[in-house]
Image (cartoon, rainbow, N blue to C red; front, top):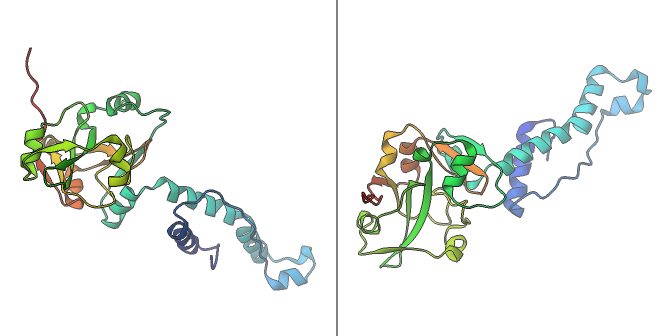
Length: 232
């Protein structure tokens, strides 16, 4: 960092570290500085301005660095994409020792399952991949899904292939920020809501945003892809 008394310099430094190393595992703070004139004089003659500067650089910089590093760590690639596109969103984090399914998470968080959406990745007859976003309590209609992307048929990818195809893991898969931007279809039920909840890109993280904004940023579309329930 050029100057740890400036937040913009700290941010640039952290961005460079993450770019070169992928993540920050820990921070060792060994920074100290004081004005030359104050160092040459007796301590009791330290100027108020000089003392404040020394404390800012030598002590407070640790607080600033750790805070900003934590903020960087909390943000996922999906969130950074929204930031770049100036799309408003909210972040919700939660504890999750073991991911079961989206319904359990919604119940745990006291959220409405109707506005909680899951992300499914499928492969078509053409071997191309597609992303489908639908309510967590619903099932996808394979014929509708295939028709919406112009395929003869589609099928779910295997769980073991999720990471290699999308860069995400089961429970943390989101339509934003996959390794490649695959054609994306959001179930048309989302159009009636001002906000929906999707995964934030890692287990324990959620993004809450306007569904129209989601479709816009992934260059996707709305379509009816949910299977109709049979009445008993």
